[in-house]
Image (tube, rainbow, N blue to C red; front, side, top):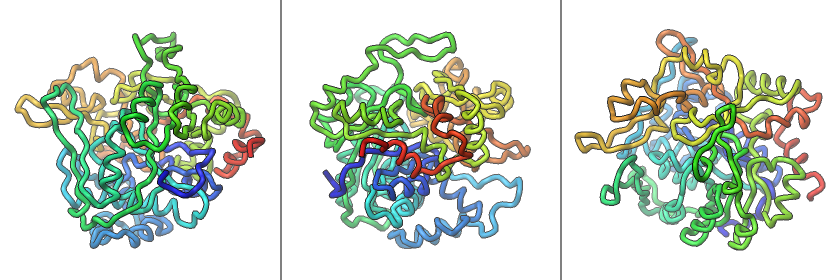
Length: 474
């Protein structure tokens, strides 16, 4: 293990973009459990908060502690607006990431994850703070990891792919050495290999740092076994298909129910006995967010559970208060409808979407929105006709996607998760015509039961969730 702290029974889910913010992670860590910040889109999250005036001065306080010479001053000079943006003025955008990231942009990415982790750790003495990244989003991964290490993060969690190379990268970065990851390109063969590289010295760093635990998120016994045997992992999070956000696709031939959702079967069940035999600590995620779920996990040999849904709708989460309250009010009246949409995400993974009027889950809102790809985190790299690396996203304008070799049927039903998830946390982009990006809420299936937990309360805190989950298990 890479920490002397006791392993937690509860790991709070790393819900992006910005739902699992530093306030939520800190609140959970202060209870002695593991709070987790989301690292997805952290660079845009940082600059939008700064453009909105950095209420409370928290980001400036974190950036003042950033051990990268001149980086904080440069970021503040370019993006901080003391009075915030005037009404109706769009956010200033960052350039879309590409394979080669210049040192200034790499430093901004590192600063963003540093700030989130640093603030989450502030005042925490007993619990742990982790960061969650998506394996699918490769371009910012290495500088994101380095920024988290600079802030002394306790654990790194990664799913939505096979993060086999991450343990070695963490070892290199902790030693202050360059790190690299194989760059995944759509349609590339064995002989067409590209790399993503990051050297801490290029952003004025390189000091030895503490290497955090690495906990990959898996949804199959075979992947758990492969990572345990071939990578230096420190534990596992075993996720079922009822978890929120992205789910692994069903194994074998895809079959859909009457609502168009993928059907999961026996082949998608993880053999917990086999996982326990690997000899690593593991936590169960997806549908385990209850005292009974925790007891069942412990009985199966797990160290504990990871819980997202209950934490996503607590007062400390990053969800925009008005959206959070709308969902809770509906939950109080009855089960909230959630659809596992096989088409919504540009990644091709099934994605859980809360059905809420006025959001992009509403067909009329989806059709009215002008397709645009100006954040680009979910773009896929491919080798263009010229031989150069190009990028495309099936949620971008159809003509742009097909012009880069994409097939038109891949664009049907695709939703812009990047812009939708920023709208979820109250940071929607305003377009030149005055239109505001609609939200696109996601949640695990446990949301259907949240009304029972909520009761007559208008809301609740992260500490209430911890107390509820640990009931009868202490």
